[in-house]
Length: 210
Length: 210
DNA sequence: TGACAAACATACCAACCGGTCGGTATGTAT
DNA sequence: ATACATACCGACCGGTTGGTATGTTTGTCA
Image 1 (spheres, rainbow over the protein chains, first blue to last red):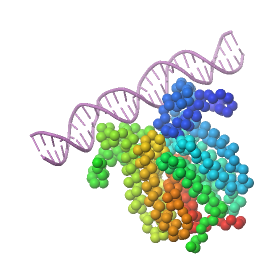
Image 2: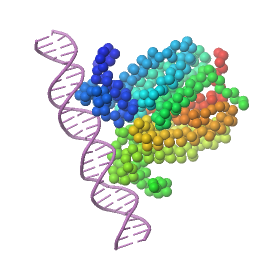
Image 3: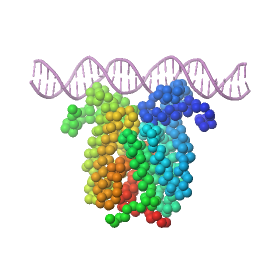
Image 4: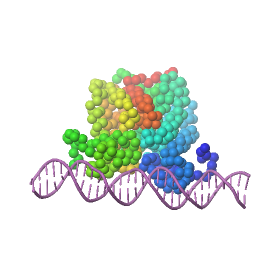
């Protein structure tokens, strides 16, 4: 049905609209971004927009799927998979997420998280697409977490912990948007790393006796 | 200038609009909520709206301040302050937040977090009001955290940990909006509690040797 | 080369948006 | 009784919105 953008060399109007959506909606939100804004940024006319997408909602959902594919490619080829110890891989993932926090706020925040917060009640298409982007990414962490749990002899609910990492990131983004700078997310990522270290015994909790 | 709503007995148009804003914007977002929608829900006319608020943005910001006052009252009179041990108070706060997760999603999610995510770039007034609501609430946790750190002889950055609790909640809300149910927030609150227990030695991290 | 569909452009529309405006009802101080 | 303030009403305005109707260009295959 939809042609894969990777099999075609030149950027079609569809691809440019997808990129424009991710850019503008991360900046201004979904409802505050008009179809005309999207077309102008993409350098495309309205006719092209409604040729490729049956509605504005459909573009929002398609962009969420596009976002999921793009980010999964980024994370798949990231260096945090290298360590032999699965716990090191999990901790390296957290470090990697910390390193991604750079530049202006709309550049490092999550399109899916931003969009779903606004549109979860308005469009099931959008909600499902965003949920898929977030939870499918979380799933990619489960194997390392489960392997670490086995190696370190710790009982851990791997899917739950994987989801929690995403919650910490999303929440950090919100606090950073409120604060106007990136220190809240960074701090929360540090807390998350410490939590994982505690969980697997990489860091010792203080003894109960003073 | 503005009359306090608590000194007047009957609900004015202003109060009804504030309540309507918190209700509708948590449900549908700020940009997707029209002034007419707000007036209809509040049972007032547009004239009344713009008599009390100079713009829609101004209402959004005023509602954020209202939200901050309302919630700070709720938390001030909550029972989690009772335990003698400050760490128990912190853990009781987390339990209390967990108990608040009930009913439909718009009923337990945060107005300030929802709004600031959408409007942080559009209105400094809104952003500041939301930031104040979130960070002032976080500040109310600092004393207990600091007292617990002293009693348990642990070095903890109390303001940072206080902010982190809010980040975990906000992030949990987003994941729950994506999932369509409350289990993601609940799970993340459980992880948060475990983290605090590790930090203060209430829970032992597993020994490094298998 | 020509047929034909997909990819895009142009022009346009009705509904809706935030905000304005002239006016009224009610109080209250002088 | 006069004067003035506050609270509120609802018709109205210009601009913007998502979406449509109708071309024109472009790539593909016979």
